[in-house]
Length: 173
Image 1: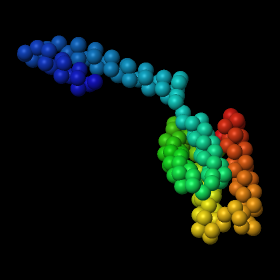
Image 2 (image 1 turned 90 degrees about the vertical axis):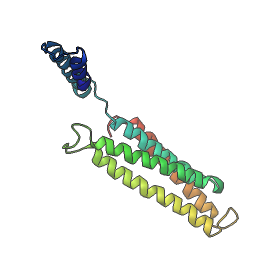
Image 3 (image 1 turned 180 degrees about the vertical axis):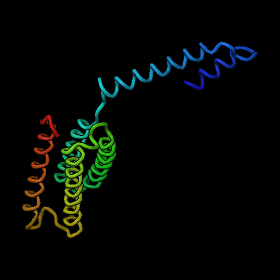
């Protein structure tokens, strides 16, 4: 905008510009507009992504819950979907860490988010590892441990679904 105002002022005539009020007025208008925008976006109506991070973490927990409950053909697809959601959560957590006012907070949302995201990532790997071990060792519905594995996966799935639901219900992170 500043360059456009400068070029417009210089090239509006074929000779040198002697009246600088047009340039000054345009530049002041740009500065006032930018300062009003910054004031509104930072103080009056900020866009914070901490709330989005809670919902994204809940979505990740739901995805891991679906992975724990997935049958053999759909495990790889659910694993890839969970990894994509984990990646989105990592990016969102990085943006939340840069939000104004959260860098120096004692009980920052980012500290809890990092801990929860790391624990969720470990849980994702553990659930996927369980599927890999059962698949590679030939454990299917006909073996003696299959009911125990099914109960375990169902229990993990229900715990994760409850955790996801409680994460979206609470106002604070």
